[in-house]
Structures are given as structure tokens and as C-alpha cells.
Image 1 (cartoon, one colour):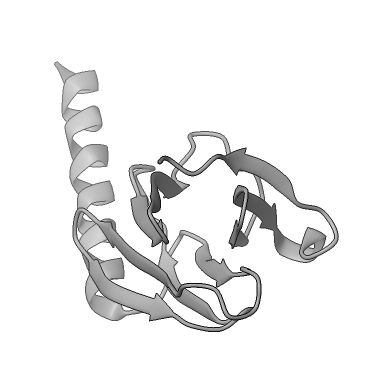
Image 2 (cartoon, one colour):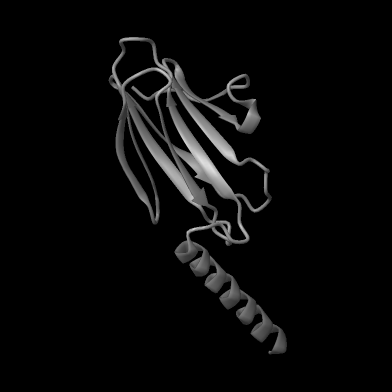
Length: 142
């Protein structure tokens, strides 16, 4: 019984810290992270349209018209590792939906995530690896 009380107390402390972090506006016991969606299509091509959201934050619809134009946001990861941001991108008659950020139980020490939309698909890079190290993650649908 005593152990169960400790577990419940710890659970409520974590929940309170998570609520405090959300209201304080800063990162408390959790890293501050950043995600970029970058338009890297050929000149004079159709604009890249996108919509990104989490369970709690709808980041809205955005249109990127020019090469190297970007949309980005910063956020604090939840103390309980359950943060998820997903994005849906449209270009010409193609589209793709993917998780732009998903918490991990084991930290990977990445602070900045880059998703680059190119003619042949979506590429990923991170931190100081961008722009020299790109990994193709997804093909366009359609």
C-alpha cells in the first residue's frame, strides 16, 4: 500500500509539472525543440501547402511559394514523453502526411528537426547536419 501511495504521488507531481510548464510558457525539465518544413521545389513550380498540428495545438494552414521558404515552430516537449506533431503537405496533385515530431522514451539529443519537401519526396535532417546530410524518408502519394 505504501508503494502504491508513492507511485500515485509521483504521478500527480509529474502531471502538475506538465501543467506548470504549459502555463509558464517556458521549458521546465524538458527540452525546447524546433521543427522546420522547407519548400525546396524547382523555380516556378506550384506552391507547397501544409497543415501541421498536435493534439493540443493546431498550427493552421500555410502556403510556401518560393524555394527555401519555410514554416517553423518551437515547443517544449511534455515531461511525460507523449508529444506528437503531424503534418500534411500538398504539392501539385501529390500529398503526404507524416509525424514531424514524436517523443521518444530514450532521448536522441536532437533539438532541431528539418523536413525538406523536394520534387521526388520528403527528406529529413537535424541539428548541424542540415543541409549537408539529408535522408529521404517519404515518397509523395499520387
